[in-house]
Image (tube, rainbow over all chains, first blue to last red; front, side, top):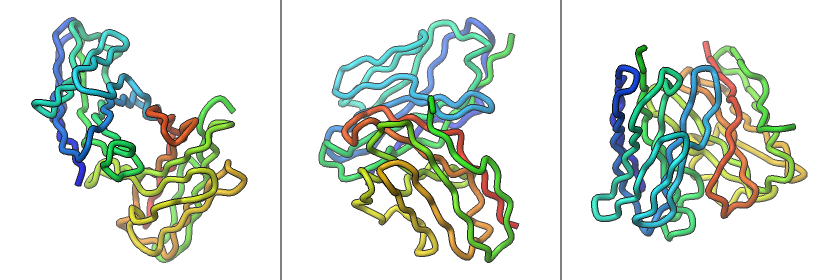
Length: 116
Length: 114
């Protein structure tokens, strides 16, 4: 079946540090890949996505590149801010790539804490 | 409304009771999804509706769980004879079309079974 693996944390960084959150996946077919973010007290929001190999998704200074050869979709940001503190979820959708699933498959989430 | 809404926001119930959780998707969105978020299992996909039809119910955890959608809009997730392991946050999401990549999530219903 499909699965997503990501570091669970918590990951604690100082403001302006470089961020990497690793995400690897297992899926049949050619899934679409996503990063969702959950800020404290709020619902899940789509942060960025990539739908095919070598695509780069980007938003709010965050980037992730779809690497089919390593089945990875690592999230990066060059300089984090306190306001980036949240839980980040890597996810995949294999619905229309032969994978058979209808919903998103999520990783367990990475709790990111940015200290001033 | 502007976003996906869910009610109630919190529900505390006693073991063995039935509960109904409601989801109002974004107006015009044809696809609706239910997920469960719990400490032990993370985020699990439960069921998906295209219009009023759920093509695959195999993601529901047990036969105590059922879901329906009426008028291509509101959906209800019902849990019968609740158990303590049902305690979780139940999330609803919607997308304009089933093929759309982006799902918009509601704030969730936190269910606590005593």
